[in-house]
Image 1: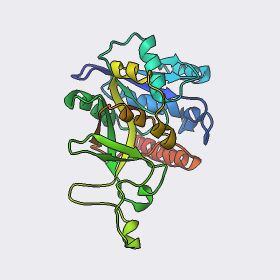
Image 2: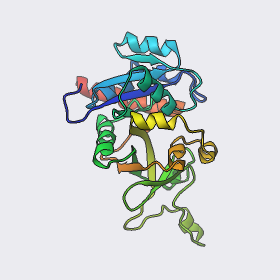
Image 3: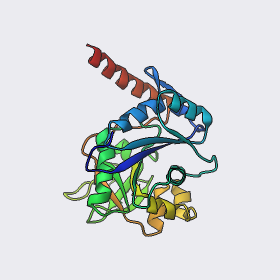
Image 4: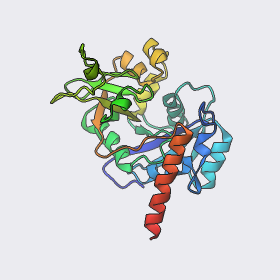
Length: 265
């Protein structure tokens, strides 16, 4: 794509192994593998290049089969960020190059969201930029699979957690299940898309997993534990959930099939 005021590339980490859905990035979604759906969404952004970082040659072959660019990376990486850094190293990316990490199980990721985090790294001078959405359902707020984030006055992350934060301290049991909401504070759901410079990636991989990261199983806590500022942009449009379960897959297939029908009508 290219040809814009932004200068960034997208790297899509895509592991073959998955606890809930083995080889999920290769699962069929309305006639195309999931990884192709993600790749095509990323290509609609203003990224100059899109690269799939995978630990398995089967994924690499599929990506190259639809005309994409794949990079085979080590199977030993503990996080997608580590995998992205290996791509940056193999491709000889400069230290100030901006990279956007798009998850391989997000076939409905809006291109505008990718552009937004890339812009935020520049405009906010952030070391890492990512996104969040306002939580509107209490069940989502209390769901440990939904990662919550709380911000400081400037929009930077104070903490990420699977627990419901901020917790509304009250003795009223009915109020405890309500969403915390004031004029300034809303419950926020973190969206797992990241933008950073290669220099930050090179620093990140030298750090051991933090204890908080190990407890919450959230790799962004490694950066927070080392004093890295993470700017949280509020997404300018709804971000559809990714695919973690069979139910998620059916939902995404239904959405895409409807889009295909509308475009053909």
